[in-house]
Image (cartoon, rainbow, N blue to C red; front, top):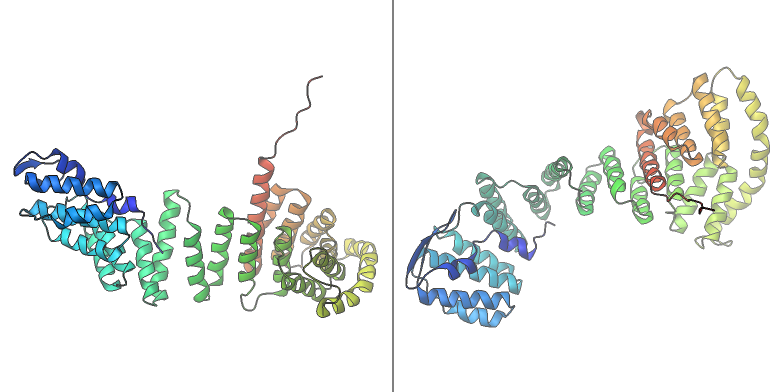
Length: 424
């Protein structure tokens, strides 16, 4: 939800305190730059000044007493009285009273033209807060005709449509607000990403879900953020199991394995891919982290199955690598590369992914994605970024997530202190 600070609510108001202090005695008339002509009696000015002082001191009761005694007889006095009621309502955090006070201000001809657009926006916000959504939209439309069409107004429109259970109508406004915020060079608030992701998720637009999560992770990349993003993205229907496997690998690389389900799902995917040693290693890691127990049925059974297969898998790789080197296409080399990758032998994996790509006859997206990951895990972040940037098609999203991780590792490397030996 769009929220307004106390200072923002008051910033669109005419400076009542300055006006009442500047006005002269007995029905003074004074023209203020960009504002209305002041017509205020000495009696009204004194009471208004006292009310304003009480509001600034946080004394709502005294302010209320002074405001209740105001008897405006001119247009400007009516405006000033309404503005003071507004400020008192802000002090009391009474949104309904704030909205009523604004209506009273609008009934006068003394609202400064330069403040009118923002005040109409504030009126829209207050109508939204009190649940009058149709009036909120009407006030935003009015504010726009007066020239106020800032990003906060766009997000407020989205919130209003969401409150009206019209997510489809809200989504374009959220997308527009994000585009404006990016164009301004200002950071996009995490809550805005969450809203846009929720809408894309609801619309089944998984390409946008992935893109938004990647952008969000580029700014908010804690282990918890990674876990939430990947867990939600992994729920996309029809996702290739090999893609899922690489996303779980990314979750592990971020230290974001947080539950029994995470370790179990990762281990099962690895076993399904024929990576028995990797499945064994994941179960062992889950037990060490206290997320899995030796008596947990599913992983205990899996551990019993993969342990003997893991030893055979490791022993078979050298011979498979020799055959892959002599093969006509890259299929065998890709299989060997996947084997080395699953054993976390990333330099050897990168070598064989390159061999597979040079021989051809393989899924370019998969090979380049895993080449990029292997290079990144080997420490070649520049090479990783280049490989991942070449990925298109079904593997583009997983490559994109890993590319965000590479960027984060690059920033960490850039900020590592350089050790300098003391002078002898």
